[in-house]
Image (cartoon, rainbow, N blue to C red; front, top):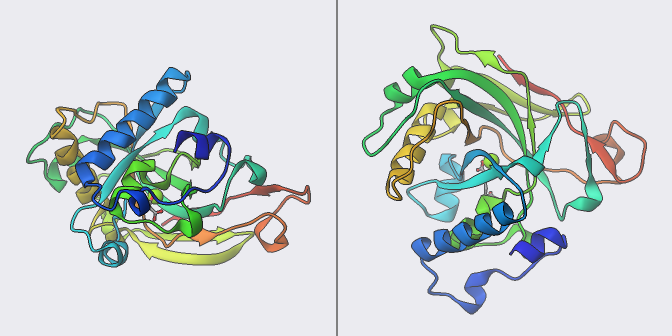
Length: 252
Ligand code: OOG
Ligand code: MG
């Protein structure tokens, strides 16, 4: 998996050879992958949730979203550019991230507890890039692949948590070169992005981990993921071949 990422090539899904792979074993593989990245000098920015939309969960036949980790080398400055030749078959999606003001420790964490602990919100563009051929995987496969992340993340400007915010009603649009490609509302993320963070805290508590104050959490795609590719000028603001600037996140 790590070689697939560093050499930018697709691999066959693990469950082709190991159809019995369990979710638990898949998280053990993810853990190994994370250790390799840490040994390579990379550092963790924070966890991310995936498969949080009802549609994706139904499609994958799962009751619980999955998590993975965002690393420092995935961060692209806001307004920055991405080299397409460093990626396999990227898709981009809009997400809402939280910055925590207090620790959150499961089990039993509720949405209300999360809302209380959140200090700031960040609009995020996540570039997902599954290492599997044609983005084709089962649930254990995608967990083992760090939830398709390990790609690129653009963090927008932090917003202080408003006093009376209804994040489930927040409208998000994903634009590429000024053209709206996808729209969604916060409710698309398991009813409310804070539910997603609560589920994450509860899942992490199974391995005795908590969400620490100051940490960033990506709560999962609000919009569908949009394929973007080099050589398709409508997706590119830069005329330089192989480069693409992504922008256009808006939270209202
Ligand atoms: C899995 C990861 C999805 C999200 O926000 O749902 C994800 C996939 O490749 O769909 O990051
Ligand atoms: Mg995502």
